[in-house]
Structures are given as C-alpha cells and as structure tokens.
Image 1: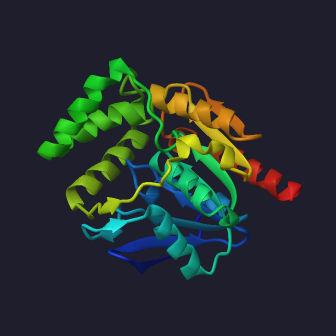
Image 2: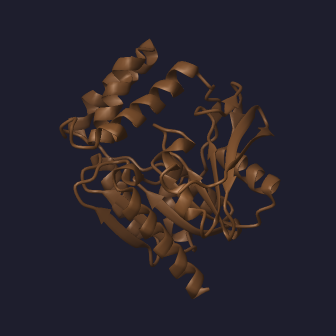
Length: 275
C-alpha cells in the first residue's frame, strides 16, 4: 500500500533536519539506526500511518540531514521538530542508536512521550566487556579513521545485518543490499556528524525514572552487548514488556517487517486502551 508522505527540512542550531510525515492519529515518531537512515522504516510506514500520524527524520550524520561541526543535542533536535509540527506528545519508536536516543528523550522530557518502543539497543552509558568482539570493534575503528568505506561497510554488514558469526546468506539478499547501500551513502556523502552532547547523568543508571509504557524488543542473534543491554532495560523499567525475535539479528523490522509492525501496533493499541 502506498501512503502520501510530506517531506521537508527544519533549520536547527548548526544544522538542517530532513523529516517526513504521513497519516493521522496520535503521533508516532520513528528514530532510525546508526547504520541506516529514515528509509529503514519504509516497510512499516504505510500500515503505521493508517493508525497514527507518523513522523520520521534523518538524525545528524545520516541521510539528507546536514550538520555543521558544532555541539548539539539529539534530544533538542527532536524537541525542535515536535514544536515545529505542533506535537504536544508522541509515541517513540527507536532501533539501535535510535532507541538509545529515544530513551534519553523519554528521560529528559517524559511529559512529551506517550510510550516507548526500544529495539536492538542498550541504554546510554551501558558497557559490557565482550573479548571475542574486541578485535572486530578495533578493526572497524581503524577502517573508519582510514576512510576505507567498502571494507568498513562489509564488516558492519556482517555485524548488524548477518549477525556475529552468522553466514552472509542468512538474511534475504534485498535486505542486505539495502543496508549496504544506506551505509555506503552515509559514509560517502559525508552529511556531517557534529558533536552530540550526551545525556548527563547517562540513562543506564536512571531506568527507574522511566514511567511511560515501554516495550523492549531484540533478536537472539544480535551482538552480546545489545542482548545484555535489552535485558537490563526489562529488569530496570517497571512493567516493561518484552519480545525476543528468534533466529534474528539486529535489524528486526527489516528481517520481519510484518510481525514487527503488528507487535508495535498491538502494543500501542494496548497503551491507548489503558488510558
């Protein structure tokens, strides 16, 4: 199903955010992963927009958004976008880096968050020593500094698309191709990253402050620190719900687009019925 989407730009301090809006109903804001851009939600938006006013945007450093080399807050950027669109509150759905941002926003301005869907991530400030992953992380850092984009993208695809230690053909070829394309574009186009200001104190020690309905989802083939961070979220947030996708790595919504969308909508419907 095709859905009408309105795209535009918003000037923010030291940058220019690209965003899209579709549908009607109580707002739902989508925040993409750090290995994609807002296009990662293409499979979800048509159905979500039948029930909600869906807002998605490219965070700084990604897609069509542009940023100067300036200090900025991801929380402030989203607040500016909500103010621009006249949104008093919104459901928040984030995956990976986007989920960490969504959690920080929930902690900083809980009055504007109706519910939180936290996917494939860990709270800011969480650290887990995973010796078997150390060499991979070091190599990715080296490739980034050397600007060796093709090799870096392939290594990231093995980590975040295939799943650590999984074969390259585990996921559908089009899913892998889309991810490789998005990552390559982000690195090659150089949209500017800026210097994000982290939430202080970090979220990892503040999970008991989350008072909105929360759903935590992750894949059982994801990177160990993501799995551990997700489990910590469930333990630390009162009444948090959870779902683990079997035989799935990091990009839940790309591997299982229909099931992912259904679980999100079911959760949001339960939130609405309980209010």
